[in-house]
Length: 179
Image (cartoon, rainbow, N blue to C red; front, top):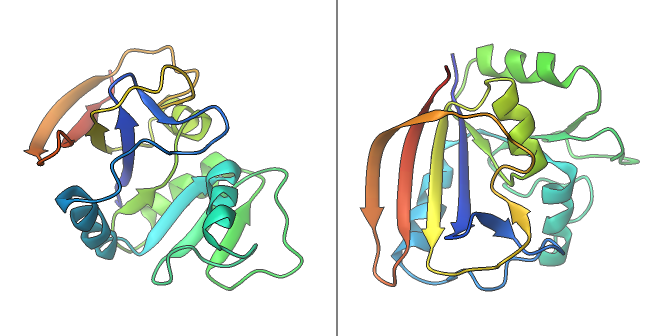
């Protein structure tokens, strides 16, 4: 079975973005960035919510086009629709849990979960996230979009490894033990 890996940057106070969805303040240069970009080669599939997909528009992503050229994209949204979408972009608007379980049971690499917030909590509540890779950044936002927005359950994590980068960024890698 394929793993879903939530690979995301987070502030020390647990935010992945500001309230408006922007990410200014994260360190955008350094070995942690090149390692992240290199790690994207390990995935052939990416899943995300509508807000994360649309965030790509501010970086030149065109609606209905893939953000990662080598990956199949599944955007989970009940409100996002494209007149025409690239063959690598599929919007899942119904039976989302079934679609996620089918993806996990399909053949391929681990699945990259991009974004987070409410989508991350949704997957966590259904015990679908297998691993966390959190790029913990030495910055505080004070408010914004949480790593897991709305999650109130307790989950135990088992450390797989930790990497300390210059500049204070840590890559924390955990497996989730669902109770």
